[in-house]
Length: 171
Image (cartoon, rainbow, N blue to C red; front, side, top):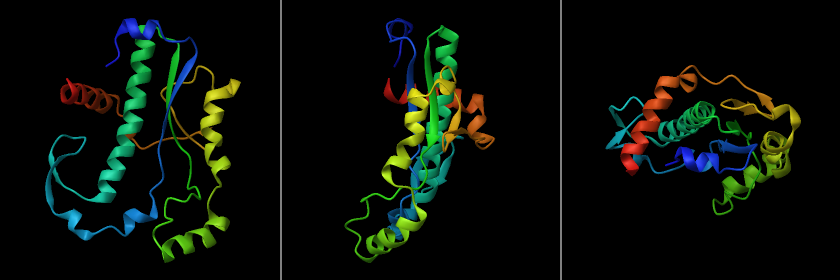
């Protein structure tokens, strides 16, 4: 939890960046038993059926909503810190190294279709260092450009509900 006093002691001009990791291939090949009915809450706070893709999507939506709510709170408190979210793109990494043939396919096709690690880090570096990004807060970025997220990701009331719900969970 961040108090007003903590914010005032923060370094002026700092930035908080939420990185939205692209869907890894491993999610597509996970055991189907995970789709059984489970007690979980989506961001509308109703019981739902658990699925890995839906859970992944909700986690990314939560990152965008949280960055927006944090940016709003910083602004409201007069704190000179920016909070943004971003999508780095699909990046060729070694995350699938233990997946056999899938890893071999990813390494072969990935060289043609995916970003390398330096390209994947470009938007984070841009937001942290580029003068054009200075002071921009509560936005969603992709490929070092502002990007328009979904209507749900721009829902300030949903962001506040998520913030309050999270505080209740950790308090």
